[in-house]
Amino acid sequence: MIIIIGNQKGGAGKSTLALVLANYLTLEKKCPVTIIDMDYQQSISQKFEKAKILENAEPYEVVPANLESFPYLKNLLGKNEKDVILIDLPGKLDDDGLIPVFNSADLVICPFSYDEFTFQSTVLFTVVMKRINPDIGMVFVPNRIKSNARYEIMQEVDGQLSKFGLITPVLPDRIDFQRVSTFYTPVSLQPVINPVLEQIYTEHLYGKHEITGRPDPGTTG
Image 1: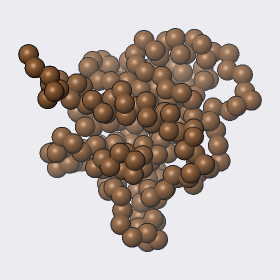
Image 2: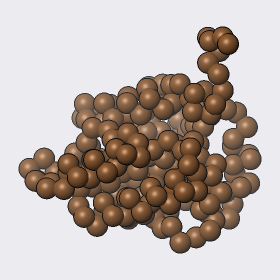
Image 3: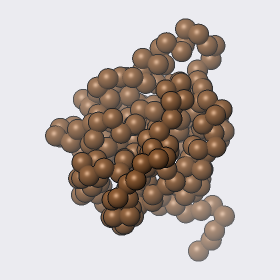
Image 4: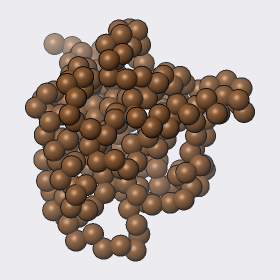
């Protein structure tokens, strides 16, 4: 299964969300995971290389890549249908090299925040994604939400995005997200991230045969 973590808006928290999802899938659900790091900053790849020096066995592989190398990587990594491939996208839409990435994906997870500019970028990203891959599943994660802030457009944003896909519970703006690594998610984050990750897993990964059109082996007819 190929999952895109993306948004046109930079600073939405794509890389951190990719890490916590990879940690959750490998440590909690025992899923085989590979992260393809296509973000220009390569922050996941840097954390992975740094962590390898300090730890023993990596729970999953991180592969630095660019848009040109994706077709090769897809053929190499996508042979086992049970594998989960997470793609941390670059924050842009102006490259035709994104088209095969969008077409190959089963699900896109889009972190966003409740401000007008991010909302517009999120909608544009969603419309482009759906135009290229109409059948793709969409999950929107309100991210870096400040507990004491008033978000006047929250109801409007949720109403618009819910037309395209699932909106999860919010992820708060917390300093301990900076301590997430390719080996570790702080225990202090579990109460806030688990409801989000469980919802994504239950609705989109646990029954992934339904997404890809393969029948449930327990059904007949």
